[in-house]
Length: 389
Picture 1 (cartoon, helix red, strand yellow):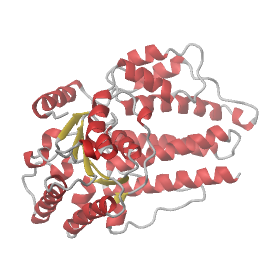
Picture 2 (spheres, one colour; picture 1 turned 30 degrees about the vertical axis):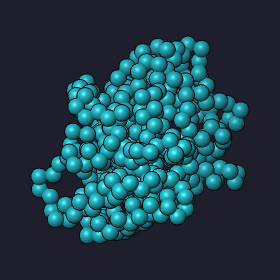
Picture 3 (cartoon, one colour; picture 1 turned 180 degrees about the vertical axis):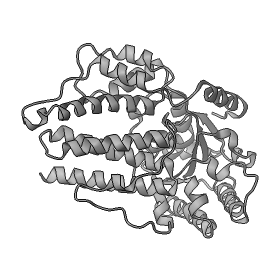
Picture 4 (cartoon, one colour; picture 1 turned 45 degrees about the horizontal axis):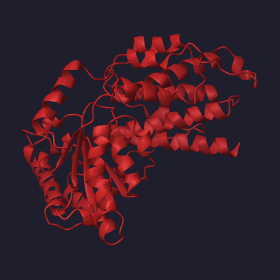
C-alpha cells in the first residue's frame, strides 16, 4: 500500500498548507491547496475502494469543499478549522510563525497545458501575443513587448489557470504571491521583499536564461485605492511601482512578466492600471465552454445513460468554471457518501452506482452561481472603459 500512503501524505501536506495560507488571509492560494487536497483524497478513494479509511477521506473532502465555498463568498464567513487538516495519523498544525519571504511565495512549477484552459479564446490569444511569441522569436519584436498583464473578471473563471499555462508553455520560473499577504504580513520588511521578488525574477531571466513570470493574486489588495494608508503601505506600493517601471520602461529585452489577477478591477488606482499594458477580461464560460467543462470534469466518473451534458450546460448558465467543477465534485461525493453509508464498501467487489441526471439536478438546485448579474455588469463596464487586448 505504499502508493496509498504516498497519496495520503500528499493530501495531508496540501491540507496543512491550505490551512496555513487560509489563516494568513491568502484566499486564492488557500483555495488552490484545498482543491488539491480534495482531488488527492478522491483519487485515494477511487484507487482503493476497500480501504478502511475511505469514509474519513470522504468526510474530510466534504469539509474542505465547504471551506472553499466560504472563501469564494458562497456562504457567510467562518474561521478556518485547523483540526480538519490533521493527517490520518493525527498530524497537527504547528504554531503560526511570523511569515517570511519564503513562506509567502509559491515557486511550485505549474503543469497546466493550453488544452486544459477551456474556452477563453480571446484571453489566450492576448497572452500568446504578449508572452509566448516574444519568448519564441524575440527578434520579431523591435519595439519590445508587454510585460505587465492584468487579468480581471469574476472569481473562478480561470485567471490563475491562464497564468500557469503560459508559464508551462515557455518553461518559465513561476513565482506566485498573494497580494493580501504582502500587505498584511510583509509590513516592516515589505519593501525589501518586493525588491527581492523582482530581483529573483531578473536573475532567472538574465543569468539563468529562463523566462520568469511573477503572478500576483488579489492585486487590488496591493494596488487598490486606500483612504487611510499608513506609511508602510505607501512605501510598499511605491516600491512595486518602481520595480514595475524597471522591467517595463528601461528597454531591456528581458523575459520577466508580471501577471496580476483581480476580481475587483474598479478598486485599482490609475498609476497601477497603466503599468499593465494588457488588460484582459476573463469572463464566465459560454454554453460551449460549459459543455466542454462538464465533459472534462466527468471524464473519469461513471455516468448513467440518462446524464445529458448538453442539458447540464444549459442549466448551469451563469456558473463559473469553478462552480461547474464544484457541481461535478459535489455530485460525485453524494454518490460516494451513499455508498459508504449503505455499508456496501465492506464488500471489496462492490462499486458505487453511476451518477444519474437527478444527482446533478439536485446539486444545481441546491447551489446558485457565485457571480451575480450586477457583478457582471460592473465587469463589462470596466472592460469597455479600460480594455487593452
